[in-house]
Length: 194
Image (cartoon, rainbow, N blue to C red; front, side, top):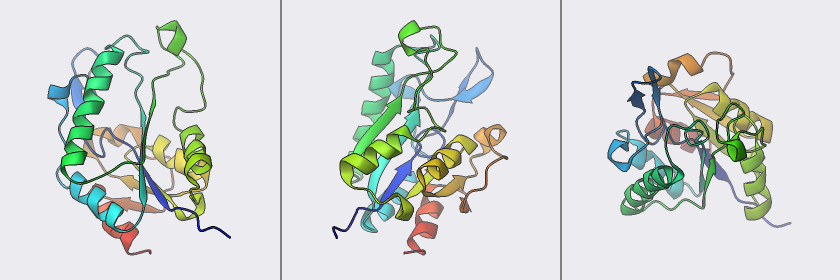
């Protein structure tokens, strides 16, 4: 039998980078420009720890701002490039970046759809399982919202819920395996289970 890969699936906003206040919605959301992209202290160290523990790393992020008419796809791609630059400089290599740009209540018709890639749906995790021979039962999903936990559970992963203060209103109904303050602590907790 071929050994399958263990993976960690990681949400982006509120986990790797800080949330940004949007005055038009009155909520903290994903960054819309590279200048608004700021890595959370300890996040890069957490990614390095997970990588050194032998996990494949996957980024799995809902990015509905284009579907909702808040920004352009070009701007979202520029934010992604800012992320890639930061993690590459830290020596971190993601196996794949998965972004869902859909939202069922969007105003851009091609993106205003119900899909299987928007968390809590597990479409991207199942795609990674099939493409990269990932053992989901021995893999983890890390995020700061209930949708992240539900996504991981739907795929059969263990889960870590981060206690990011600015996303507290999007937590409270899920039951993760572990709870951590930030990505670095999550990486240490996961490492202790190996």
